[in-house]
Image (tube, rainbow, N blue to C red):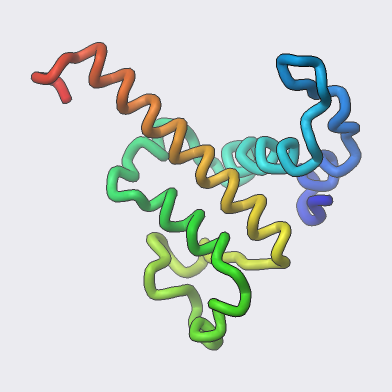
Length: 131
């Protein structure tokens, strides 16, 4: 379960069985945690779709990949404030435990997919001249 801020404590207390897939099957705890982490990033950290839209150089996907990197591959990062390929200020690099880092990675991937979808929709609306 997600442990940490008040928002995360609240998330861990919710019965994720109330959230169902189109076929009626409950979503998994992992699915719930990724979606809830994305919401937490927006509500607690202040990120938004508009803010994410500025990341056109794969920053969201790179950050997700770094969080998803297995611990054995992180050995060369020891003592560094953040990995060299981290796309943002080192203060935003906040590794915790393996599961939590994968939840963060999933939420960042979700943000990147949503950003790509918005960019594609804008390209359709504006046509090739506005892209």
